[in-house]
Image 1 (cartoon, rainbow, N blue to C red):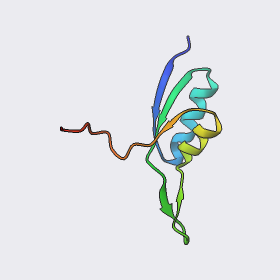
Image 2 (cartoon, helix red, strand yellow):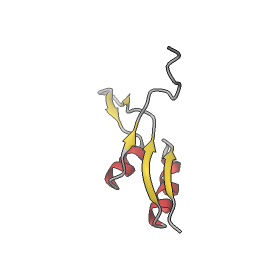
Image 3 (cartoon, helix red, strand yellow):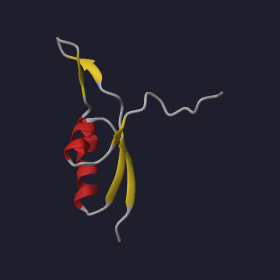
Image 4 (cartoon, helix red, strand yellow):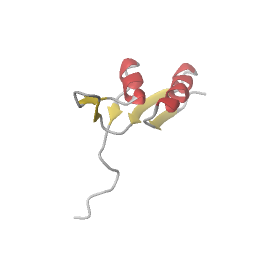
Length: 72
């Protein structure tokens, strides 16, 4: 039975889990990860390992700053 999954994760240790889910034939409909952050000597924005894997696999990636709804 194939599942429709929304995956949430950012660090490198989450990539094998996402890869296993994709490899098992489940449909990953979206990935949530932290936004790219400045890193390195040039302080250029770098994507998280999970975001890079998801984009390479053709999975839509969402990078919200936070998950809180507007209080207005």
